[in-house]
Length: 69
Image 1 (cartoon, rainbow, N blue to C red):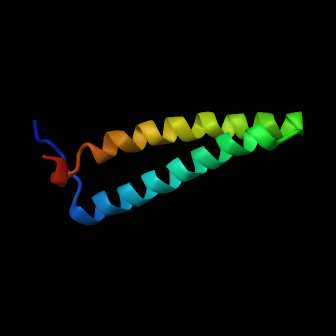
Image 2 (cartoon, rainbow, N blue to C red):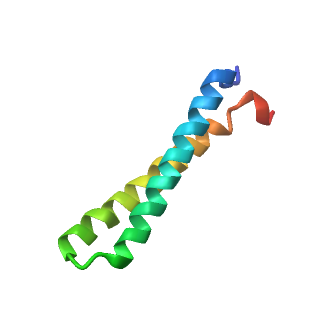
């Protein structure tokens, strides 16, 4: 079975997206604490949960990096 690795540019792009999603997650989580609108809080919580799923998926791709081998 052939193991697929990410090329260097794919690794860098994955890293950039992972950083962006992490910042978005932190921002949404922090904003929930100062938000008084319950509907907006629910939307931010949904964004937090989706961001966690996205980050976990990206980590799976990131582990295929040639740099980590």
